[in-house]
Length: 376
Ligand code: PLP
Image: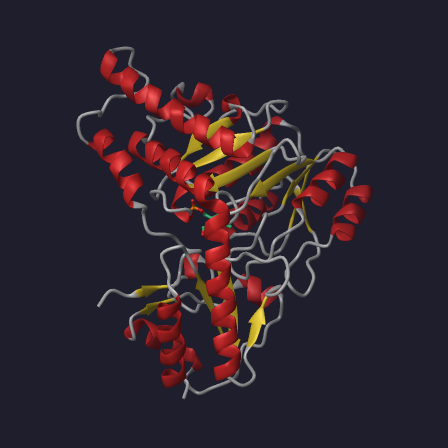
């Protein structure tokens, strides 16, 4: 039996057309894009087409897009290189960033490279703009603010336009981890005061191991990975050509179908929420479930029950893939730093269900029924 996959915030299945687009670059078109001969040039042309697809999606220029191995690498690079190259002395992050931002920030602070400040988030995990403004007004010295567009565990979306305007007012750089929003929502960088952002292909039906970093053309940082002139001297290492081609194709597909998919997936989320409310007394939802929240994420909170500890495992046995936290703790209820920060009741079972266009209402019916059996 094929499992019912409701862990799309962790990773998404590869789109069939993405695989088709990648295959030629795993077979005959194996050229190194840095080579000047015809085989290399073929790869180079395809790589640049993908760069253009990303730039178009963001209303940015191709010169502002750099391929990376992942969003994790991009996030590490922004924090590390801003401090090294832009004389940044202060770093402001939210306490519920993904660990690839949070742990990097903590490491840089422990090494004495920056002073780390945590901006306040409210009870649904949204950054409080007044808290950011208060911090920025007090800080003397160059500052980088790194705030995710949307939280991967609870789905809460931050008002990145307002955050950008505040950063601009105080002359701070703004970096945003847009892993959960890029290719799910329109992002127009001409409308936002953002200096850096990252995306990751496997969150929108592209391949794993490929992401990109946007660096605003007015800002100059130097590479983190050294030893080659790839990516216009910004990221050494032979490009992951099939990955880049796959990401470009996934971007094109996502951009062409975004509104339709949003409506469909939001319908699934609302349906599941309603079914759960009808079936489970005392069920609650973490995050801003009816407000500005990812349509792909429903973070549920089941009342105390003797079988709560085993819920994810029992769901897995029943052929249902869900998650207890972010991708990293996927399948292991390891105690999420996000839910801990929001002080959710640990006697309750907190399970993240996350959807894609490949899910159906019939699948949700099965999941709700199985949940009833497990917690019955
Ligand atoms: N940032 C967020 C918000 C994420 O959800 C993830 C993946 O779970 C990452 C960063 C890491 O992305 P990648 O898998 O490309 O390293």
